[in-house]
Image (cartoon, rainbow, N blue to C red; front, side):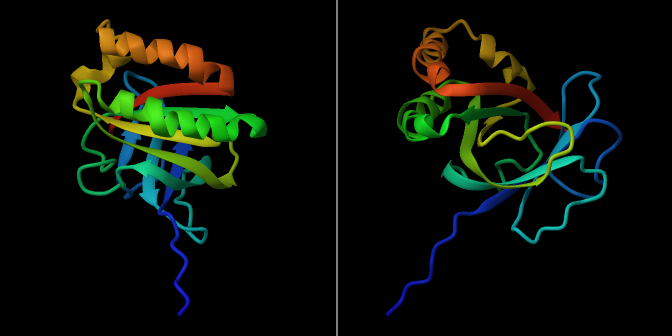
Length: 182
């Protein structure tokens, strides 16, 4: 008897820099303050039609953590978006370190409510930049948690030191940013 192939859930990540972005789609996120632009996260497949107003979009394959849905990435709480590009020869080491050490350590910090790791499946629209190959999304406990990246606690300092020693040497480029529910 043949088993059906199990396909990892996919997440469509769509971004825009100007204007209101796609209307009628949820969950939507916006940068904090007066910055323009936004982020749309939704389940997707290779045939997902891109909403109007989207300047850039990629489809990501779920690797680890919570699945998007009620209570996670549903547009009700702030999120921290972390992206990285890694040289092909460092991909296995990066994935193992994130999976086994970094991701669980971050989720153990106060203020981090949930998280998920993804890897790009297909870039659908390259608008004004490059979507990262590796993407981690953390849902924060609330807007007061936006300062967590500067948290002076011993646990947070240890996570940042581990990043400096083990994560940073593996990446070609990395970036992160917080987004609020729109």
